[in-house]
Length: 223
Ligand SMILES: O=C(CO)[C@H](O)[C@H](O)COP(=O)(O)O
Ligand SMILES: [Fe+2]
Image 1: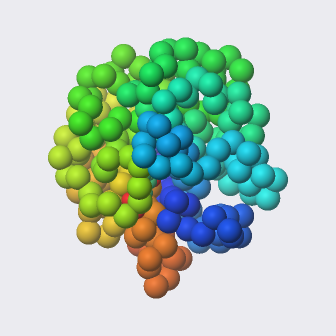
Image 2 (image 1 turned 90 degrees about the vertical axis):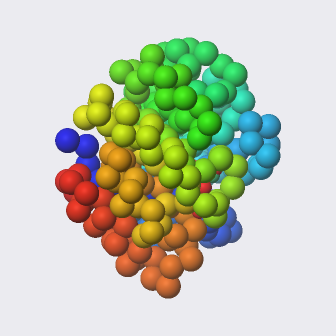
């Protein structure tokens, strides 16, 4: 049975205080630190790259979950593997051969998990040939590129489809998750929840992390 995990997205945080915020989130019960990597090409926004992960690694013991919204993920495997990323999620819509990305990570970076993400308009069938080789599937519930967007309920049919066929798979949802939308996502089968603006805009980050996590547990996924 997959476990309940909460993954705050640092995209909504203050990059000037990145390490301090990561330490605080881990103390508050965050399971993963979700880092959104954007190349200004796959999505119309530019964020951080492997040098920032490498710097963060020196200060943080926690699980660094990298979500790469990049056109050529294969080109970045070595940099993220060497930087100490714990997970490398790349998009099925990227221009590289997914099998090559997966193989490169499995052969060279035993300590880095490999996961695939799927955008809202992409049919779930696109990801099926790879699911058995992955540590996690990320079903995007907004168009990738920016935090703070409205949750797209229509994406949950993909979560339900995957959960029915893969009861043990870690299924992550990302985009627009909050106390208003999390129950539907968990009911569909998501056990790993990314939340950026919902956590960073909360009066108490600690209480929001606990509240979101308790909803995943209430939905049937053990802690
Ligand atoms: O991948 C992302 C955007 O492409 C972010 O992880 C996501 O949008 C989180 O932010 P929020 O919870 O505010 O929607
Ligand atoms: Fe993300």
